[in-house]
Length: 153
Figure 1 (cartoon, rainbow, N blue to C red):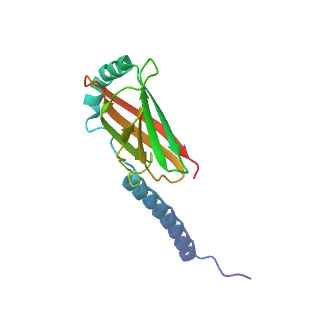
Figure 2 (figure 1 turned 90 degrees about the vertical axis):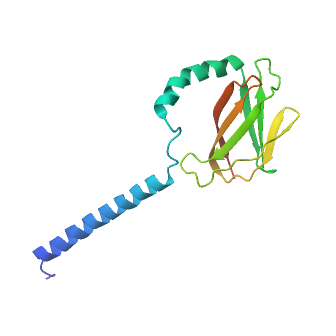
């Protein structure tokens, strides 16, 4: 016959099981708080009030962007085109490349302009990347776009 199941053993088993559950929950909560990039904007109320005006101004530009990443050459290329399909001139270009879930891999490549395309050497690992583009038109109209990129590796 086996050992006797006592109240003390049941208590130890129950406390141990709950300790494991609580420990896992605390670990996951810590990872969630410390790896999430956080706020998109400093003041969400102000950003929401300006969103529609900025959207209409940006749409009036008629710009489209195209993104290409050459995995063998490790070069990121970004192109801006107007409504007529021709390259447009942008100023104050800022490109932030990173993961959606963490700021650890964020990079700000120095984009060089040549023949209608901005490009930069950039070593990206496999997986999904988010590219946040901020620029301005010659008249100062802001242009913002978030692009997705998948690198096979």
